[in-house]
Image (cartoon, rainbow, N blue to C red; front, side, top):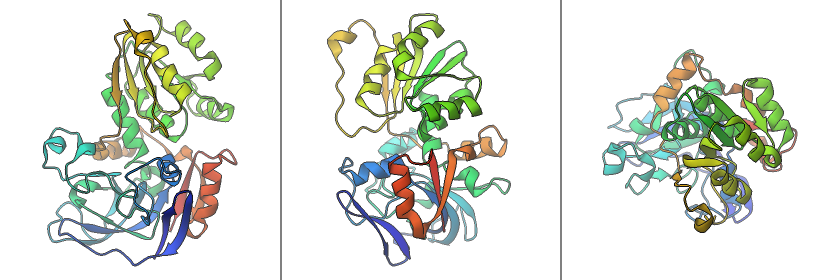
Length: 344
């Protein structure tokens, strides 16, 4: 089968690999019908994910059809259309039982697919703990509608959930990339009083304005001024940082009011520093990633009810044979790209 592979630092290649086989009775083999490219894939390419294994097939955003199941798999069967969770989790350890599935203690627990075991930018993928890692797609939901459920939409849902958003809150979301927009969609479900999206790219600000006209959009240069104007207590009640750079990291705590919640879900390519002397007295509550992606059934139900729609994010589609061109467009942010669907 074709598989897009992390060959070496800075070098990815589309190669032929053997079709995966069941290794455990809890495994399933899924024939991938559609996958996508995530910024985390670029982090692997750039060498900023130490756990990533050379030779691994990339990809952790995917949907497909169950091809084969192990003898202990109960929740899905051959022929089921499914989303694939970004995380592998056993469902039985302390962390899984408490909903912290990203910290599953299994050897393949947490973010494994496309990082430590072969992922889904391929024609087939082996999914460990398939009963937890696969979710059946409702008949009325298309592959495009379900594509982001297992990763960036689960991330946005989780971020909104742990941020304890209240109806009178002003929420600042920093970053309007794909994960930022998914976070926005899930924040909107909480019905806060105001949502501000800070994004440096004018075209992405325009995307938010066009699709979500009730959302306040602002550039980084005007973010502090806008937050102060739109907030009742001198800063945002909740800040969710999705952009993932030094400027956005510092902006997150600086724009928050005292005693606010600052949720960090971005993945950084170098360490960030909190200037604690400057922050003294703000009494901020920090919550940090990565995602605990155990709400996929609920997310699929919200999509089925037409309460969430991420299809506008898919701006480009490519065959897996053209995945190198897709990566070039995504990495360099060409042609107003937001997300790319890779079709088998």
